[in-house]
Image: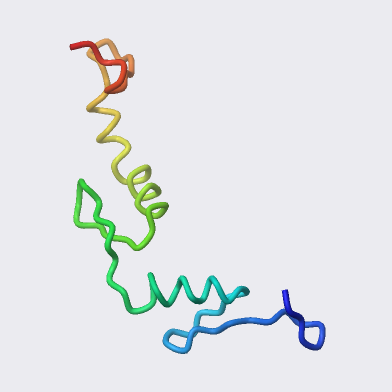
Length: 86
């Protein structure tokens, strides 16, 4: 990390103003985020995001009840598609 006058060097985005501590983070932002439409689509609703982790958070928060209902057995036990018997 480069320090100038004992302060951490920062890299601001000229398009949106976000500030990054590392040049590589700014480069990633410019390539994949800034001014780019979200490419990752939720398979269950119209939600779109730029990051897979955001989709995972969305699925866990919004659609977990849906998945629990799909994988619930009549006796209340849970199963997964890997453990389900044909």
